[in-house]
Image 1 (cartoon, rainbow, N blue to C red):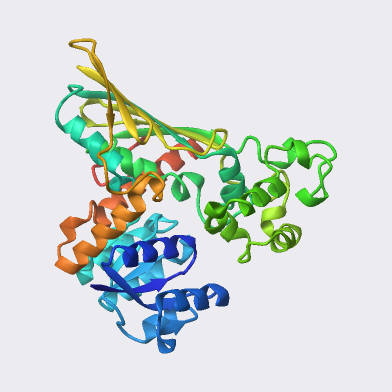
Image 2: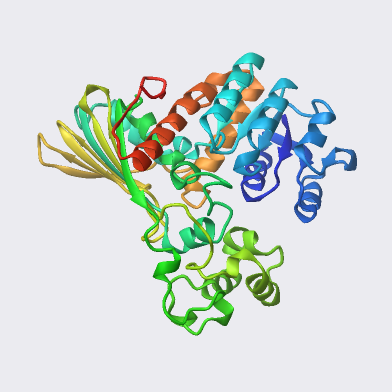
Length: 419
């Protein structure tokens, strides 16, 4: 069984740690978390000895190597230093995406992994779903002939965007990163995984269009609890979080980000005093609320990617167009049209295994189990991509953001670096 140090016991760190324990493949033996409530809760849940409970990652690192591997799920701007230090101590790393907010920091992590022989799995969980396995199998069998064009939509969801990217931890480019990196590096990596190459050229368009002060309705208050317009507002924090309170399946997320106590009084106090009760037009956020990325790949394949806040929160949608057929996927099944016969078929993911309810369509569990298997066997090939490959797909994201801000078409090398 692989022993684990949990570095960052927030929602994502808890998720991976729980999957490791539930699979019977991992045991959490140390935790580093600055929030006292989360730190103590994690120590109690996983039965961690008192001398292996630390206030931050530096304290844990100062104790030497305490486990085979570490789950690094700190805030985005606190990835580089713990990843490099822990790799130097001999830890293998399950590192939450994005690798880091900037290319130099991510490159430092990849260099540390190579230098220390560290198995690093970046949490590109979409690679590990049963749906992805099905889609790659169908493409590999040549059912649609040569892939020519791809359309991919990430429907963030109106309330999810308001929760995480307007009121929440990923609302500020300076404090976390651009939206395309913090939310959609999943998707860019997944598209590269499907197509099998880094794009040669990339352009992008997008903006913060709606969640800004000049869109604020007349008469709106700074907080939802004080606002006369709240009952009719699509982004009402009061409606969202009190509804989550009534649904136990939503207590861990999104409600767990708002308050540690699932009571009406605690929710109302958090909305009165904390960031999640702010008006979405007065939250001080600056990340885009919609973005398009256009990519041209070697061999002539083109791909368009859309990220939008103005959707339901649901599975990604993907259309893949080939010379002999067509696929239309919704994250659970594929509609396949064979151009040679005109026949249509619906292909569903295999029975058993992770379900769509199991975090990113089973990807959270699939990633965790693949990483633990790789560490146990000492075989990095058991994870879908290493640190260098993840760095390359992150570079595609940074290139797209550069294209958006500059209005240019950006040219890329096979490792993702820009010409």
